[in-house]
Length: 358
Image (cartoon, rainbow, N blue to C red; front, top):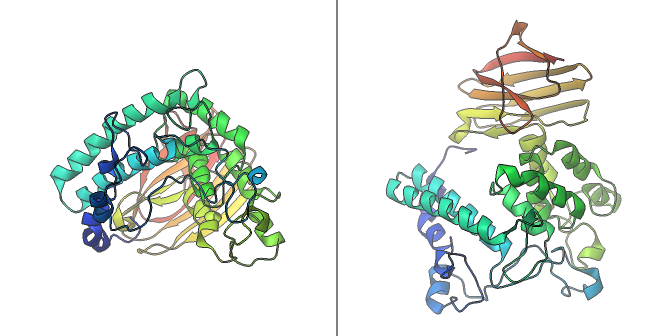
C-alpha cells in the first residue's frame, strides 16, 4: 500500500499461504496449538524447526528474571486450548491473504480466503464474546477477560458495531496492561474505535508504563520494554517500542493510503483536545503536509496533497451545527455512520485551507 510494489508479495505468497495456520483448525473451526495438530508435516510446511506455542505478549510471567508477582505483560491472560488472541490473528491472516491473492490476480484464492474470513468472524464472536459481560474472554474454558483478548479484536475490525462501546469501556479499565509490543494494537484499536481522547492520554502519560518514561530513564531510542523492571535483560534500541512514530502520522494526523502506492489517501485527523499539530508525511508520490489548529468554534486544516494523488478528507464532528469551507468555498458534507466524523468526499491534489466553524 505504501510503495505500490507487489514483488515481495509474489515472492513470499506460497510460504504465507502455509503460515495462515488453517492446518491447525479443529472440528469447531478454531485453531489450536495444543490438540495434537503440530505434526512434523505441519512444521515442515511452515519451515519451522522449533516448538510452536501460543504467545499473546512478551514477556510472560515468571521468565527472564521476572517473579510471579510481577506478572509479565499478558494482563493475566489465561491460556486454554482455544486462545482468543491467536484466533484473532488467524482471522487477520485470512483477511490479508484475500487481499494479497487479489493483488496477485489469483481471484479464486482471493474469493476463498475472503469467504473463510467472513465465516471465521462469525464463529469467533459466537465462541469468545461473552454476552453477559459485554466483552471477550481469553479462551474456551475460562471466564477471565484480559486487555489482549479485547484490544486485538478491535484492532482487527472484528467487533460488531453494537458491541463496541462495552468492549472499549472494558479496555479503559485495563489501562496500559500490555508491553510496548502490545501497545501497537492497543493504540490502533483506540483510534479505530474513534476513542481519540483516551488514545491521546495513553500517548502522553508520564508514569513508568509510557513512552515518556523512555526519555526519563535516559534512552535516546525506543526501549524493548517500558522499564528495566519489566524486562531485566531488555535492550535500548528496539523498533517495536516506537509505536508513536507510526501512530501519530497514521492515526492522530490520520494519513493512510487507500490505494497502492498512495494513488489515493485518506486524511482523517483525530486530535482530540490537542490545540495544534503539524506534520510532513513522505510518500512515494511526494510529501503530504498537514497543519491543524483546533480551537473552540473553529477547526482549521491546511493540507497539501501531491500531484497524481486523490484523497478522502474527513473532519471531526465537533457540533451538530457547522459550516465547512475549502479555500473559501462552502462545501457539501456528509456525516459518517457510526463514527464522529464529517466527510468532504474526494478532493484532488493541490493546496487547501479547510475550515469548519461551529
